[in-house]
Each structure stands twice: as structure tokens, then as C-alpha cells.
Length: 155
Image (cartoon, rainbow, N blue to C red):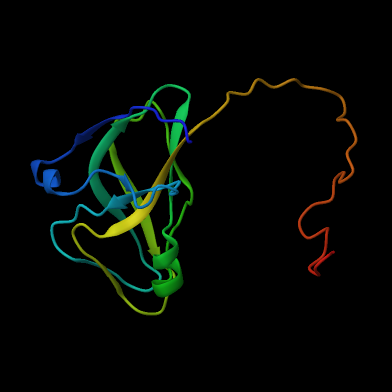
């Protein structure tokens, strides 16, 4: 069973009261659907990026973040993605949650009020303190970078 925390949420505009709060589609869902809070249909032209409001602001506990991620159905069927995926919402941010949607496809895409446009995952994070050293310990990978393992399947 997944850990449960309580997160405070508020609606930005009175009109947003009719939209559902972020919600899990199934018991096994990791992400909650975010809905578009647009007054009129919003057409995203091919290659265009738009900031889509959700109508909510959240108050995450310290030590937690929310990540805004693309919905796989929008990506596969319409080539709609999130430009900075995953987008991070910090625990001290109190502004409206907005989604940076990009149309990577060749056809215009219309976002309508209440459409599920992204998913949000809330998770813990750790803080880092750096230790400056002269050298790092060796590892099996070493400094092998992008593509160093090749493209063929290895048994």
C-alpha cells in the first residue's frame, strides 16, 4: 500500500469549482490527472507551446515535490507533450499550477475546459550537501557516457 499524505489545495477562480480536483484514475495509478481550466477552447497549432491553467494552487509539505508529466494517450494519439517534462512544483510555491503543453504533431490540437491535460505525481525528495574532493571512486561504468553501451540487445 502506498503512503498517503494530506495536501492542501485551493481553487484560483470561482469558475474552477466545477472542475474535479486532481485524482487517480485507478487504484494502481501513480499520477493524478490534471484538468484544463480554460474559458474557451484553446487551439494549439503544430509546433506551438502554450501555458494551460489548471485552476488550482497547492501547498505541499516540506520535503515533497509535485512533478507534472505528460499523459501517454495525448502523446501517442496527438503528439501533445510537456516541454519541460517533468515540470517541478516546489513545496514553497503557492501560485497556480499551469502546464506547458507543446504540440509536437502536424495537426492543430484543441484543449477544452475540463480536459485531462497532464498528470501530477507527488513524491519525497532529499537535500544534498556537496563534498568537494580531488577524485571520485572508480565504478564499473567509469566515465562512459551517452551511448557507451551500444544499441543492440544484450542477453
